[in-house]
Image (cartoon, rainbow, N blue to C red; front, top):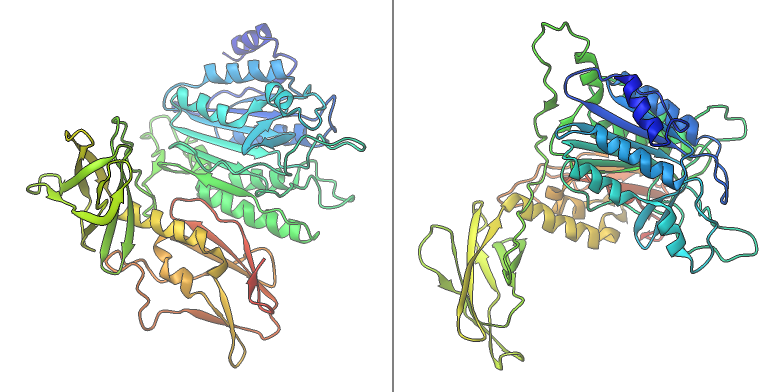
Length: 504
């Protein structure tokens, strides 16, 4: 099988760039492609990307993956390598893609740079796009192959490779853009956060052949009993602490849209069992903090709805593409349609009173389907259109939005027999939070701040006895905060200074 694959790859012109294809360790296929690019022709060369790819290849083989290792890929070779990777993936497989090399962000999209990428200057962004591999396209390819689990790791968060003395470089920030809009079943890890750069080494005396991220991530992957989120969190913490020793800020980030809780190392151990043993359990149950996905409504002219939780219950606001003369609704299977009424505003499109676009639901409203219909400008009834209402998903989404908009209010300081640090704001919107980590006088949040449990019946309530502040030494200068949300995504690290009580 291995010889046959190499003949196929040689026919594609990949023999010089691929090595190390390991046989699968179990019937449920795990397929990996690792790419390392050092030998750039027109932008600065790299020293450790190829070593990083080889290390990751060896690590993934130990975890039961069939691994392709590709080195120093030109644009054509990179495309052919991805084609070979496509052909190796079947529906239901676990696919792992690792890239070490130059990466570049243009207009919020990430591009992986082949070794023959041109030395572009200001205004030549299109040259870079045409000569590079779009990271989002790799996600699409894995989705098209119907991989059950797709894991993408990018150790490519370096300085702008197009900066040259005496020229104006292609516009682009250091590091890569976050990939927040991932489809279901995809997990991505970046060696550094937005606008951060990743360290190849800690000092001139650092003889480790791998980058700071890859040397840490590879070790964490091999630890038994850790799921992907735990691997990413432990890697982030270790890399952040290492970077902090040389006064560099590098905080790896991950984006989690996994349906299952995946244990890579646990699977590798299970496959060593006797052939007559029962098949190992591949995936653990869903963690209790997973966010239900709202269904997409594709019907033409169907309204959309936004949900907001308040002390009295739920406010649901409908938005319509067409002008409306009247709106009515009901919970599916629960009686007649009810009119929403009108507000004291004229709709300039119809020159008539505007229908009230909002309804109220009780605080204990159960999950279900809201049916909405409306009278269009011609007087015809449109609908009913189904809108799925999931209280838990709606609450998490609403509170997450508020936390993002009010990040400067996460902490506040007060001097009273020492220094008190209040986190009442976080407690108020705790239902959207999986974990809060803080760091006292350090940019690396290295301790967990315990939060009260979420009460779906009264989610914003702050009751007597809840811890709302912590007492720190009067000499404390700053506190850093990082939130892990219920959907698995991680906030940027926010730093709050005690001297002026402001957010950096």
